[in-house]
Image 1 (cartoon, one colour):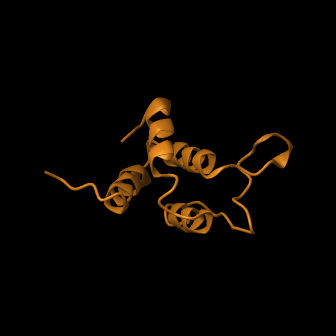
Image 2: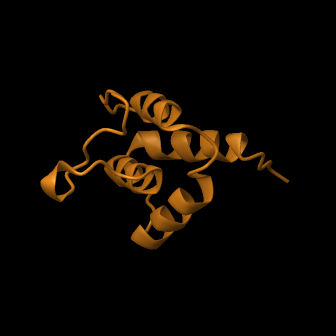
Length: 87
């Protein structure tokens, strides 16, 4: 499964408020990230080591797992968290 950059941006905007920053770090760590939440979201490579917003963090981590076996699992779990059901 592979998402376009536009889809990643839209998903990150839609889901950003369903969890706290700490929970987002835990969520993406379950899909292979190795981040540590230390009173702010982890550095994702922004200039001057500015910490990301939740939307930026989610988009970056989705892009990191894009086109891997983890992406489908992550999207399905996000759909469940948002209350989206099949059918």
